[in-house]
Figure 1 (cartoon, rainbow, N blue to C red):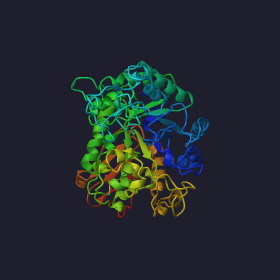
Figure 2: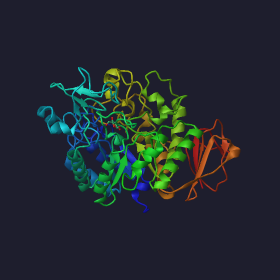
Figure 3: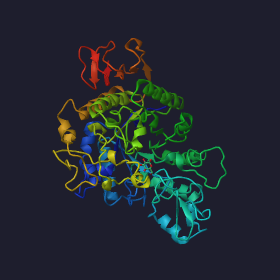
Figure 4: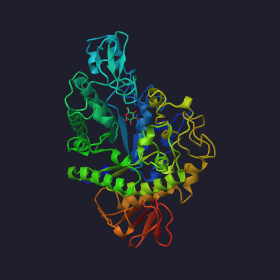
Length: 520
Ligand code: GLC
């Protein structure tokens, strides 16, 4: 298995809308990103993954794509996107874009054609149109954002949408759909894109008419793999272009199927992301991950956050650190100082493990989840579709603080599309830049050491039983040892020649609780 860039990469996720605004309209854009590329180069990342940047009515933050072969005007132009790819490559940073195959936008030309062409038309065959049962929908499927998964159109038929009604599901049994996406992949590979993040990858095959057959009616159906074999053939027409799956499946054996050598290159590790901050849970997740990946020769990925989940600083500061709280409005308060310490320790753990690591924008600044966005300003369809019971994902999508002491903190010259909190002046990139104890400094140093001593490869657990069950420790083939203290009190560091980096102060050779150390 050749060692290639993506196997051990540090990949930075840019949520473009909230990264940096270059034209003063309150929305992040390509101009803002291009102006901050040197920040990402200094941080030491190998690749950028951008959430969807295509024209979109933004019913779901761009995951409702109206046109795959262009750029959303609020973000910029296709010419700017090409410039951005060239500039990123100039800094030795690869570019990964997001493709959303499960659904389109209701403003996409295919869907408007389907509506006007009417029942029984070929245009409707690209989607899932059905007649209902009496006055009700064709079946009882529920949308992942809440409410029924079917919406009725004026001529009486219903169409399927596993997400919002503005995101009609495509029919992947239709060869035209398959061809279209192959063409879209080539469109972007031809423009130099290095990788594709595949949205909702396990949901594409479904059959609303089928009698129950023991499989879930729309998740991880066996037929989905043929689609990715086709995508892999397209990727392999080019030099080193990769496919990364958003595959949320609790069953590791089923998950592993997506990583077979003729399918995707890697997939997000939601098992690790969802793990509670506990030694047993994290160790079990790491072991499950490696047991799944190693036999396939596929590198693992290590992810602590993304644009869909609560920020680790806030999650790890709660009594219950599992992510089950994300959907609740009545959450217990979080001890942010504790969460911050743990997030620092978690960062060194994730960066030390074998494989690639993902950093969601703002993670390197230690941003907390913003939990008090006024209800009338919330944008996530989960909030409205759940009947205002699920707060949704806006709290991790708040625009980044770059500089200054008050909103918009250098993000824009206008009012940001989502409000930033007061009190983030110490979290700006500018404030952290010169502070060696900052989260930004920890990520920079961590990534610099990682580039030399970590990344792709193998690990060996160190059994430090005399330190109790709260300590996780492992060594990498470079000789670097990572020790994470998840126990209640300080523990002595295992024998070492040199302390390379710690997530918190080590005094008299003792590693405090909720602290990690890299030793040699
Ligand atoms: C994925 C995206 C999420 C989006 C959904 C529907 O889970 O990460 O943000 O809402 O797919 O496209």
